[in-house]
Every structure is written in structure tokens, then in C-alpha cells.
Length: 399
Ligand SMILES: Nc1nc2c(ncn2[C@@H]2O[C@H](COP(=O)(O)OP(=O)(O)O)[C@@H](O)[C@H]2O)c(=O)[nH]1
Ligand SMILES: [Mg+2]
Image 1 (spheres, helix red, strand yellow):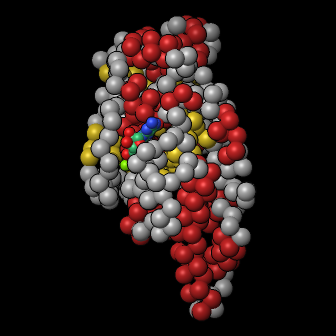
Image 2 (image 1 turned 120 degrees about the vertical axis):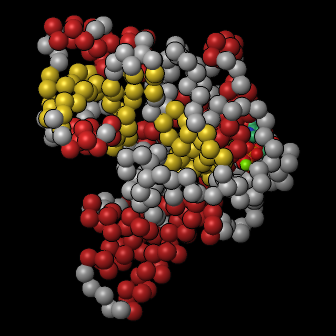
Image 3 (image 1 turned 180 degrees about the vertical axis):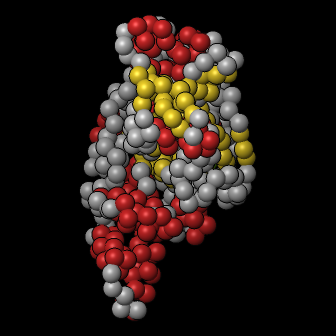
């Protein structure tokens, strides 16, 4: 099998803590629409203040995309076959044990988790060989992360053998082809114009890479190059996760290992889960979920593991604000400084930034109160340029 290079390393299996949730975290706002007119921020700027990160679920028809979408969104239940072209959208909260603990400590009026947006995109018939239509590709380009669902269970409605490796390979090839088409067109024009300079060099490099069937994410592109490419929204620059939709009796990583093994040549992180089982679990309330999981010997739901992994592969981190009114997670790109982070909370806080009061969530949880953190000398003031770390608790002082 050909080695495909995809951004993202195989993630380590993460242990999931038993949830001690102050309230169910799937009480998220939902949207349901058949077009992509939901964006509130700047389309092209994935880090604009309001825009949620979008996770697009893609794969062949019948692979279980809609079932997984429902399970992840906490909707549960069986699904009717999707209507062609329809997109399901839902905002889901990112489970975070730190927020759970902070919420227990402060007993705030509101607890707000970080969230991402899931999109259930239309599929492609297995073995259709027809590829995605331009519309489906355009929708994928709007996503920040692509999740390929591959079927490893027997679906009586699908007249095709179980072959997740070829489904994954087929999807990756589709994505690569879509970029190739765009880049080729651009290169041909630049060549015709006998263009010289950065843009020409960049596109020649991209073209050669795609011709060699390599993902563009394997290139180390400069910030400047990436900026030039923003408008193209190239698919092979996006992170990819694979969900292997397994039979119910092979629903966790250990028992699914023989199914995962043949897929190890794909460099994307692979998540084994049973969509059907997860959807059933999603219908139970939190206590019932725990009992059920214990009964079938699975530690934590795949849902929690998966959503956290998606969040991580987007290179996002969370910082927190705490108080009696609100305990809240805020999302910033890794590497964001304190001033940018303040701007997530409010533009004014960024403009009038003086200092950020800082402690870590780990210290606060360990020591039990802000006063104790101060006593231990683990409370400090940070300037604008301080690089926000995952798990920081910030309070912004502004003029
Ligand atoms: N046994 C089993 N059936 C599943 C699983 N996931 C999905 N299905 C069934 O497969 C069919 C297609 O699923 P759906 O989510 O609509 O696939 P989509 O076309 O990719 O959106 C539905 O009848 C589901 O109930 C699974 O993990 N196990
Ligand atoms: Mg569907």
C-alpha cells in the first residue's frame, strides 16, 4: 500500500476521567440547515473572534457519518438515510475535566465549555468512482479539520465489501485530486504569463508535491506562503482524523486493534468506535452512561476522546476565566499571546490591556483556592507578550 502522509501524528490513547458533570454538556445550541450560511465571523480568518472551528465529517455513503454526527452531538437514536446534499450542523461542547473541577469549586451561575462545530457532509456512493461533486468539495474547503469515516461493520444496505483501507485511500485520493485541479489551473496560468517570483515558485512547489501524490501539509511552508494560500482553502493543508466505524463487539481501541493494524500506513490518527453503540450511549443520562460503559468494559465514551482529539489536532488550547458568575473556557490558537487571548473575551480588553493576572488551573485545583495559590507564590502578573498556555487561568486588567 502506498504511504500517505497526512499532517498529525498518531495520538496516544487518552484516558478519560469519569465525568462529574455539573450539567449535561450536550445542551448546546443547534442549527440545522442545508447551506453554509451560518458563519458569523470573517470566512477567511479561522481565528476571527466569533468563528467556531469546523469539523467536517466525510466518507462514503453508508459508512455511518450521520450516526457518528448524532452520537457526537449527543442526539442519539437511529438515523434515517440522509437526504442528498443536506448538511447537518451542530455546535458541540468540548469535554474538559478541568472545567468540571473549576465549576465544582466556584459553583458559578454559568459554566461554559469550549465548543466546536460539527458538520455532517454529504457522502459519496461506495464504488461509485464518480468522485465528489464541486459543491461537496466547496463545502469541505470551509472546514478546519476533516474527519474521514471508514466502514468496518457489515451494512446490509451497502452492496460493497467491508474494506476500510480502500475507503480511506479513496477519500484521501479525492482530496488530493481536488487540490491538484486547483493548483494545476493556477500553475498553468502563471506559466502562460511567464510569471516570476514568490507566487510562481510557491505554486510550482505545490504542483510538484501533488503530482508526487504527497500532501501539501508535508511541506514546511512559511507564514507568508500560507497567507498567500488562505483564499484557496486547500484540502491537503487541513488536518485529518480517521474514524473507523467498527462492529459493536469491537468498539474500543484494544478489541479493534486487529482492524486498525492494516491501516497503520496512513499517518492520520485513527479512532476506532462503533457509531451505533455511541449513538445508543448518547441517549442515556450521564449516570446510566457510566453504568453501561462499566458493564461492557469500556473506559469513557469514544465521544469524549474523539472531540478532545479533534480540538487538539486543530492546534487549539484553552485558557479559563473563573468567578462566581461564570467559569469559562476560551479557545485560542497555540502560540497566542496574552493580549490576543484577552481579545477573545472582549476587543476592549485587548485594546486596553495592562496586565494579566495569572495562575495555572493545575495549581488552583491542587491548592484549592486563589488565596492559597497566592500564598504559595504561584500567582503572577503577565505582560502583553506572554504566550498563553493551555490550562492558564487569566484575569485581564485593563485601563
Ligand atoms: N451495525 C451498525 N450499523 C451502523 C453503524 N453505524 C451506522 N450504522 C447503520 O448504517 C446505516 C447508514 O448509516 P448512516 O449514519 O446513515 O451513514 P451515512 O450515509 O454515512 O451518513 C444506518 O442504517 C445505520 O443505522 C454501526 O456502527 N454498526
Ligand atoms: Mg448521512
